[in-house]
Amino acid sequence: MRTILIKKSPTHIHLLLSMLFINSITNKVKSQSQTYAEKLGWKKDERVIMFHVDDAGMSHQSNQGAIHALEKKVATSVSIMMPCPWTSHIINYVKQHPDIDAGLHLTHTAEWTDYRWSSVTGKNASPGLSDKEGALWNNVFDVVNNASVDEIEAEIKAQLYKAKTMGLNPTHLDTHMGILWATPEFLNKYIKIGIEEHIPVLFSAGHNTLMRESLQAVPLAGLKNLNKKTPEATNISEVLDAIRDKGEEIWNAGLAVVDDLYISSYDWEFPSDKKVTDKALCEFKTYKYKELLRSVKPGITVILIHCTDSNEEFKSISNSGNTRRADMLAMAGPELKAFIQKEGFILTTWRELQNRRDSLYK
Image (tube, rainbow, N blue to C red; front, side, top):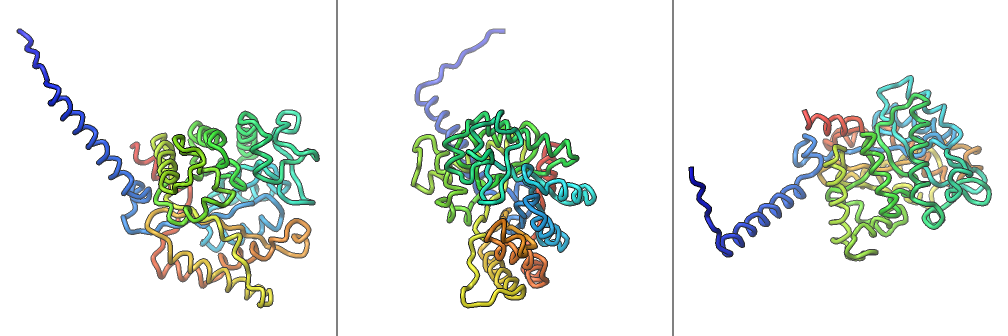
């Protein structure tokens, strides 16, 4: 049989390439218009929420606050600080309650003046992570300027190994004070380990309606450097495009990704003209969370909270007791739970997100 070669004209080739380019753009636009919630099986207009408790393990009061919030079923996920002194207590609780969605609050800072902790790897192994006291640095700037990428990676792995040795299989990884979002190099190590261990990492890469309001804040400011074409990008659309591209990378590696993230409830200021009581704290944060939820767009939104059963003793650790106690009381109160049910919000966990992501391979 004779093979007949058909010579394509330059015009034909140009047309073919144009069609391929248009198809590529069309597929990309379609992918971006679909929320990660839709990709994971929820409907287009559904608002899927995760109230996520940070800082478990930091203190006994932090653990008690987290437990109280989780038992009321509004807060649905928690993350644990492995270098801190009350880690065993909260891990033992999780082991006794295996349905609890518990991950690691990967910790590379120790921010309080009189209450410090050190790296799991130790000062000799990771000198760049330690200040002159031998504790972790108390701010993001010093970590970025002193710690190597290898030390960051080693500490992540050490904290994960410690958790598993203690019997905890974390449902997710996230980052204390946003350290692992601070530079592209730190972020890539965080994501790399998540992919290798098949553990989802907190990274919001959908519409980011709420998150874009906080991109100037320290926990998220480092994400501005993700745009390789324009380092330190100030154009918000370029920054969000770079974040979306990173999210697709995580998704394509088999991990769940969320659509939006809210980090600022810690900074809500209780009215100075009101007397601080449990009732007033609960009413204040309940009102604020209801107001926030009204602004949530369809998709998966993670809302970071800090629930602590703060008391006089906690004042020796931090002056943040009121906002943390208010979170605990709002999560435990009936009003917020009733509002969530009435408005049709869907509560989820990291375990559910990753189970849904894994099911797409079957």
